Length: 106
Image 1 (cartoon, rainbow, N blue to C red):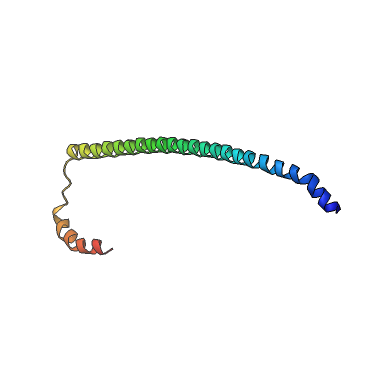
Image 2 (cartoon, rainbow, N blue to C red):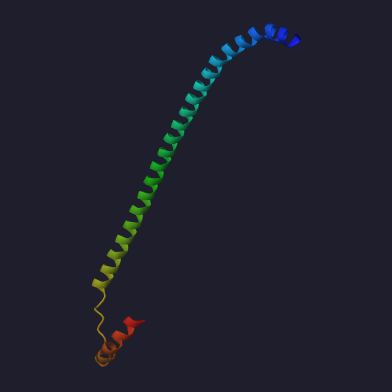
């Protein structure tokens, strides 16, 4: 009997609390999901910007390397044109031909 009185007394209160807390929980969940979605969008945006910066830096380094290699090639070619051609002495031509295949095996 005591339990029935408690149910009659607290039953409407529990129903009112349940009915009012469900919409509050739904609003809270919607707001938190929207906030999380905004955070993820900002994170994606910042990662894309970082990736773009890294790609630009990589392209700049690649361009610098290409320029350095081009400068080295030009220097070597200029040096070859300035220096007289290397001609082996007459006595070394035959031994060099016989050593040619041995060098490739190595």
